[in-house]
Image (cartoon, rainbow, N blue to C red; front, side, top):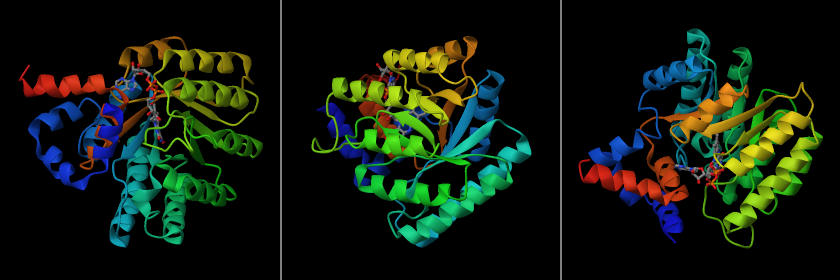
Amino acid sequence: MLRSTLLWLSERKGLQGFILRSRIARRVARRFVAGETLAEAMEVTRRLNGRGMKVTLDHLGEAVADRGGAAQATSDYVRILERIEREKVDAGISIKLTQIGLAIDEDLCRANLRRVAEAARDCGNFVRIDMESSEYTQSTLRLFYDLFDTFNNVGVVVQSYMRRSEDDIRKLCSIGAAVRLCKGAYSEPESIAFQKKGGVDDNYLKLLSILGDCDSPLAVATHDDRMIEAGRRVARNGNRDRAFEFQMLYGIRRDLQARLVEQGYRMRVYVPYGTEWYPYFMRRMAERPANMFFVLRAMAGK
Ligand SMILES: Cc1cc2nc3c(=O)[nH]c(=O)nc-3n(C[C@H](O)[C@H](O)[C@H](O)COP(=O)(O)OP(=O)(O)OC[C@H]3O[C@@H](n4cnc5c(N)ncnc54)[C@H](O)[C@@H]3O)c2cc1C
């Protein structure tokens, strides 16, 4: 109930302005968001690299509604890639297609995505296409497949709460596409998505076992001990040359992130930054309503 309310609020523009201006919310958001500027995100990246962790940078923003905004976001990503190369940090990028025009026009988005993928290729870097709400699942995969014909430095995300995901995984495996497997962070109807944690988790384990049987580069994105144990099994039993990594979000289960590095696993931290942190922040609240405790504690001035 609280989860769906928080997810509903994450899409309300009215509350957004209020939360973005709130000093308390900004303070709590800093737990999950690296800062508002690229300089701050680079600082966090260097710190994580120093602890043996790789990074994927997300310049926060989504549901961009005008062409100018989409062009700006595209140029920003090109600049981020150049900065990563210049500063020699170990980081790639994660990108939401609605930030570069998918909510406006698919062809516009295709052209923008191609620009980012080209820039990444020129820098020897990698672009992960985040998966958004189900309204965009099919078009996101379509754009990914179009691009994958020419670029092998792009990967996509599959969400285990979606009932269609087994078919998607089998197709992605058959072409050797790089997959990040996560549970899914949006509010989706029962007809297309598992609603209960048990169903989402069982499907995650099933998808992971399918992915275990193919050689696609694999990113196991979760903070859940059971999923991580299953990921370990895939890493142990699979092809040694396969690119395998765990991925977790900045600020969540830092102890576990460090432990996996100590155990010799490749660990990549998803580092979001920027001024548009409201929907991202609300999704993190929805995943673990206990996080609201931090907000309440900050409000109480503790
Ligand atoms: C690297 C990465 C990339 C992602 N990319 C996408 C994407 O492209 N599209 C998409 O829809 N979703 C994405 N997600 C979000 C994902 O779908 C889940 O919503 C999120 O990871 C929570 O699921 P979980 O696997 O951690 O399991 P859960 O069952 O939600 O949580 C397991 C345990 O992890 C801890 N935990 C989980 N979330 C939080 C939190 N917010 N605060 C504090 N503790 C927490 C708690 O201890 C919890 O008990 C991504 C997640 C990661 C890690």
